[in-house]
Length: 294
Ligand SMILES: Cc1cc2nc3c(=O)[nH]c(=O)nc-3n(C[C@H](O)[C@H](O)[C@H](O)COP(=O)(O)OP(=O)(O)OC[C@H]3O[C@@H](n4cnc5c(N)ncnc54)[C@H](O)[C@@H]3O)c2cc1C
Image (cartoon, rainbow, N blue to C red):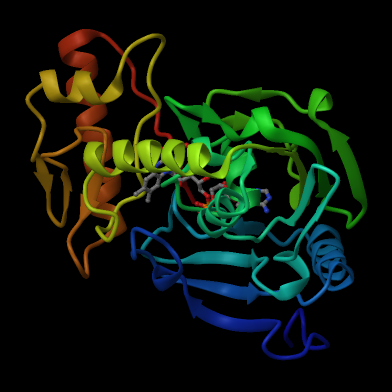
């Protein structure tokens, strides 16, 4: 008996490999992969999981997730259907589905001379993943442009939360187990040429400071500890290029963990633990993973 027998294909599939759906390209299958076609279908799935105690994960573009080699039990949800990727623009407010690809969204806004999200140039992911992670960098974070977020609770109910009701922190947002189904951003019209130049400056900075985009990684593997750079500590500990099996620290950016093609998540996990141990031994600083380890 399938927990979701009444959901049509392709909304629910069993034993689906997750590696191709993540940037690390590692890890085993999801017991169930659910790609709901509407908010109502998402609510049905979440309620059923809530009532049966079934574990649920939500996956964006997998740009910050490490999936274990043995896979994930329970349900993995992806909001990739048109119901969750719609974009509308009205009087300075951009309304966008939680599954929308941020890179495409940022480019569209820049092309139309709408400023507010260009600080996110070069950061892969979905709108929902970006809000959950409060993604950003030296040019700013996603939080600054958010007006409100619609979140679905584990019982399937929708809650609308204004920017001031969410607490954004460095690479964190208090969604309290909610799934971002859509968000509204405040944008403003600006000189398109200047905006394109700004976007290009941010994009170029990103490309020059990290390994090539196509590599198997999830960006920075550790959070920066209080006022310090995790990458610099790893570099000073002599760990650039350090390898555990199929996983290694990038020579280009010491906070990027990379994997060989066909590698193992277990190697990445071992690498994370070993690097953290070496940094604590050397500098007494405890590094915490930024990557979400499922
Ligand atoms: C090459 C590269 C460069 C990067 N550079 C940066 C950078 O400069 N700055 C930065 O901040 N990050 C960076 N990252 C990390 C990554 O891009 C961000 O964390 C991004 O926001 C992840 O989005 P995602 O949709 O892929 O989320 P996923 O990786 O799929 O998920 C991340 C977390 O968000 C949760 N989540 C996903 N969707 C939703 C939703 N709809 N509602 C609630 N929770 C959800 C997941 O459950 C998980 O806990 C980089 C990654 C790569 C691969």
